[in-house]
Amino acid sequence: MSSPIILLLGLLLTCVALGVAGLLRWRRARRVYEDRLRQLAERERVAASLHDTLLQSMQGMILRFQGVGHRLAIDSPERATIEHILDQADDVLAEGRHQILALRVPVVYGDKLSQALAAIGQSLQDNFAIPFSMTVSGRPTPLNGDRSEDLYAIAREALYHAFQHTQASSVELEMVFGCEFFSVYVRDNGAATAKPLGGLAAMRERAARLSGTVDVLTLPDQGTELVLKVPGAVCYQTPRQLGWRHRLAAWLRPSDHRP
Image 1 (spheres, rainbow, N blue to C red):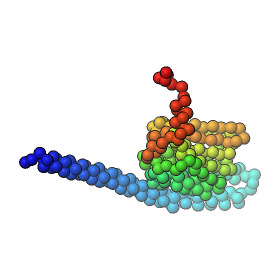
Image 2 (image 1 turned 120 degrees about the horizontal axis):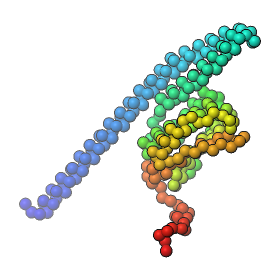
Image 3 (image 1 turned 90 degrees about the horizontal axis):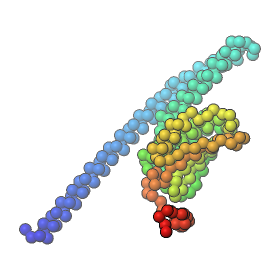
Image 4 (image 1 turned 180 degrees about the vertical axis):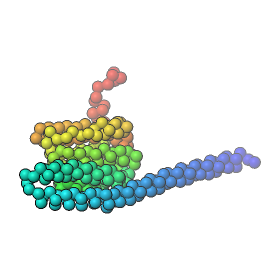
């Protein structure tokens, strides 16, 4: 057999092997994606069931106890006790709603993170009757799917705290698609003495896994701002090229290796 034929056969076998490997990788990725969709569907079913049964039943019981309390005299000790118990029940109900929101994780791959955060903000606005607004700055860039879920979890926790614990009259979320960093800002105009963010340590730990940071800024009479910042090289699907201003600033920056 001549040498060109041998080379051609080798090339053909190599192409076949690469094709088979690519097909196997695609099938594996498809199975992972389908398993993920099944898990999300199951979580959505459980969340809907809890909302339609447990929370609705609890809400009905709270309303009945409120009716009993309103029939008692204003200065009655029994009425004061019932109102105290109802306040605790409201807190438990709000926490239950939060846990259900955590169960109802949307598919946040790629460019759907903004849609998911807008949906959670709207849901919290409906539950707590506090106005919510959202803005997107920069050039929207598809995000890594695995990173998107962590980003969503951090922002969701920050939004829930802003609605539930800051006594705010408005909450705002801003997403900034920068060249070097992807950032999320959650702002409220609540009281400076409001309950501190209890899950901050867990949020920072989750952000650290993305090489990112979480900072909280509190100013008197101006509310609180939580800042999540993650390197674009970590969370963007396709690394973005720096603009000429960034390249010029990097070139002008002093360096120990530059003569």
